[in-house]
Length: 476
Length: 126
Image (cartoon, rainbow over all chains, first blue to last red; front, top):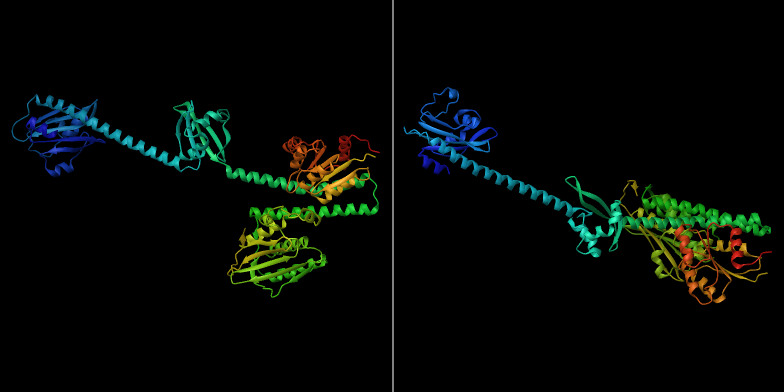
């Protein structure tokens, strides 16, 4: 455009300067020395261009600048003969200036100024359009960026999101929501809104879709201050649900187990109070009450132990101890109270020094021995042994009892599981002993298992890893 | 006296003993079972006049036994007292829906049990 202007006005040099942050810089020019081009930065009000830009008034100057107004504002180039300087204005805003000049003694005519002004006006429109275009482009880029961020966020969330308008039409959804809801609602996730409208108005609801327990929380969607629909967030609560169910079942079982001895005690005590019985029977009933009391005590202890082991809220107090010694120390008590059974330590008995919690391991061994006694017949043989290699040490307890059916073997270490109720009940078993054994083995980094055949007895084994002298306390 | 027979079902030997002692010397003939399948088969074969049934049995729950009894020829009219540690409303409803005539919770009073037995069997006690 400048070329055209210079040609039309037969000018020797010219420039278009744009005003940015109150400073004019040369945008395009012709016929100017390069140093001038780069160095020219006219603040608003300084120099001819600065003055024109500030006042918004065109200027026609001939020859040297003698005018009072410019006494301080002098351009460097004294060889300028005649120059025109016109502001580029668009809607009362000055965008810059156009300056053209002639060096030869050919002054601009009077009409040239208004003509340049018209040209400048056209330039102004062009400039403004360019600016608008750039601004719009930038805004669109920003909007796209925001959109991308939103999409990435929605796609990366763990929860599902569905936004609907007041009619239930889907405005936005993420892939997680699709994954959750598609099996039941297909492509139109707005169906969820339509179906659960009443509950969602209250804030939240539970849905079961495709085996998942979903919690749906709905909040109103506000667009520019007015309610335009609803935002639903869906969370997969299945795991927590399962856990709650398990807890509830466990509590139920515990409650039952605790009530049973109490039932027996309470009933016999009432019978003893309200009826006459011969002394031998009275003794029998009182004996049963004592046993049940003892059983209740054991149950509570084992439950506490189990709870501690399961929630991991205990500290394994590891010490260097010998597994064989722990085993040997358990035997005297058992031999004394179980005359009907024989306990045999199978030699050679490995006696490795391990990092063990002696209290817990002793308890585990006691549980295994109790089990063996309960499930082997009178006069039965209970064998015990320890075998070790470089990496592990195994303690096993073998009985000649009734054995365990194949399909029950995996259940044996479950809480409250009893293979044969009558046997266990008579001897005060709680069904928790083996669960504790397993926990204790695993807390030491080992495990426990059983091999058994019906009629052939069972071998219960606890395996401990042999660590390389680790002295740390382990919090389970 | 009455010549009635009662089937006692509980997997706890001591609870069975309580039931036995509660009902002894009153002229009842007592049958016992420690699990669901045995209870069901005795109910069908012996057709007792009353069944006292624990709900938490090992393989087959007392509720299932009760339901099966209601569908078995000859056993469907036998009155059933359910005895259980479960005391929730839902549990009680489930008990009655399974066909029980009475739902008693543990721990129970032997005297209360006796009263219920007498009512259901429609007899007088000496």
